[in-house]
Image (tube, helix red, strand yellow):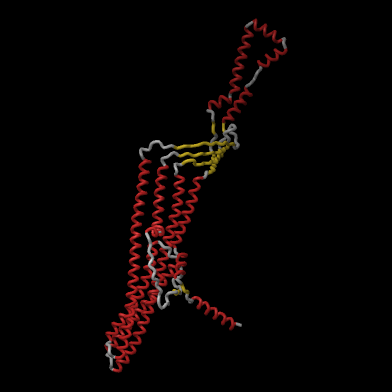
Length: 505
């Protein structure tokens, strides 16, 4: 049982090792897809689009009424006192004061009746009438001090408001009616900003695709040059063996033998550099595609005997470039934004009208004698703000905004001319790449034939080693130029499409 388990473990380890070392074949389209999915700058551009979307939705809210609620609590160290201390003291002693005046009046009245005989007779007659007698007795014995003092105390207590704990709240509704066109302009600006972010995203996508293209075809170029270096080194190894035989037979000299060995060493050094360059280029492509740097990748065009090159020669008119180039789209949108900024600046100096409504609640209540209870009220109204005179500030700021709009338009026109120049240059470069490819192909055929004849003549002993060295060098250079010409032709087409703003995905 343990033996079987060990065998299974060994097989699993071997399977994991094979899987880890498995090569991943990448096509150009797959490199584009991976680069677009993993490029960090592209992710930033995507978030900029999301940000512009949120800003657009946020600007639309300016058309709608805004509702806000405010609440507060406040603790005071003292209560509010509406009466002064002198007035409060007077009210608290109002009964005592009144009673004193009544007593004084009563004493004065008694003094009158006691000193005046006629008044005393009238007083005696009143004593025989029970009703009048009771009324007079009650008036003479009247005592209002305590009652009036109590009333005065109640009045002062009513004017002493309990405001140690104060609660207040307000709900407000605001609705803009006219803002000088600023809300409409700002909403249109945010819509343009959304388009601008999308154009920048498209521009970053094209940059990412072109970067992936360059890295991809650089690997293809280096891989083909590596195969060329391997073939060249193998040819020199075979030639070195033939040279050893010729030296042994006395047909060639040791100098010829050393010359071939030097060439072989140079070829092996170039082969090592090509291998390292290929590894580094693949690391760069892995970084662009978001793959691990040590990923074992092989490109679909890397092992082809010959890279296919199209012969298309597209022509892009000025209108095509203006409609497709992301940079021109961005600048055109910027023109619209600056034009709308003129509206926004002008709106600051136009009348603004808005409606509002409030519901206010407080404790103590302001509507029932400041009782410790909640009480509230509604109110609504219309507010208008009309600028009258600002010493020409609005006029000058509006003119400044118009000047900025003109500057942006001039920038657009200048950039458009430069981009059209770039497109025409790329078209010329594409034609030059076609001509160079044709010349290098003819040169390659001649170099192959020259090397074949020189090698045959050297083996027959009728050609010197210096001749074959020159033939091999020419052959290597011809093949290298041919590979470069093909890659340049491919990249010239990519650069032309990029300059014209054609979608490269």
